[in-house]
Image (cartoon, rainbow, N blue to C red; front, side, top):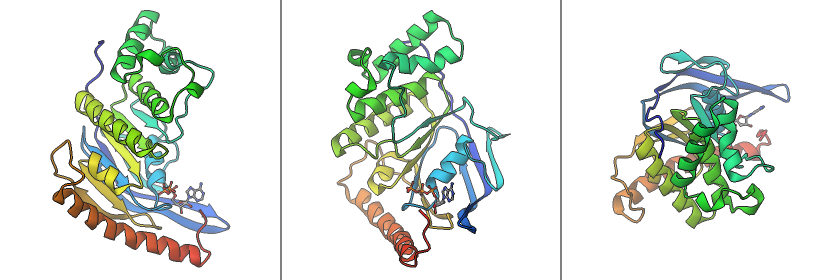
Length: 270
Ligand SMILES: Nc1ncnc2c1ncn2[C@@H]1O[C@H](COP(=O)(O)OP(=O)(O)OP(=O)(O)O)[C@@H](O)[C@H]1O
């Protein structure tokens, strides 16, 4: 296997606010968010629909900047997307006209790497993600789980020290989902990336993260920043796991209720 960069980066989010205009009104998507994510940490953002998880992730990605406040990576302010931050979306985002290996190679070609270097790196990524037998296939001929493996390989190809993941396993069945969660943990342990991962699922957050950050529904603030100190691989049937699950369920339910009341009043715009 060729060597891949084993580095990670520190993300600092300071006093971040994000206001959208909707129907002539201000929608406070994020309010006074402060979050420090040390290098190599795996952090999950958890919350009901509309609490600002994607807005925060997109701000770190540089797709949509905060209305005020600052986000830095290794001390440098984020003002646009960059190769230090790879993004994996729920909808795979693969090029349908390219094979698996062409999809993985694409970013490396843009970077202007040599043919030999690209071949070596794509080969090692196919191996790493168990995709060797699928290299000549097109996305339409792959299962959802396989497509998501390709999307992860494509981000890893760029050696981004930070991986931003927006509900990447949300569309997968339970078994495939657990499989990919395990794969992701293996990759994270091996490559020591910093991961910021958005999910609706309490179990997913507790299974994966070093820290689970629960957000409130509109305005999006941090309701709870919970360190998950359970050893890995985590036993989802254990008492300790279920105690944390219960604790987070209660917090989430409060926010879900606020969401529903908001919708009831016809005030929700999402
Ligand atoms: N471009 C936009 N214009 C207006 N309002 C927006 C825009 N993008 C997001 N919002 C609002 O900001 C709030 C946060 O949205 P966001 O998509 O970040 O939430 P989320 O927690 O990721 O939800 P989901 O889990 O459903 O993706 C929502 O109330 C949403 O309606």
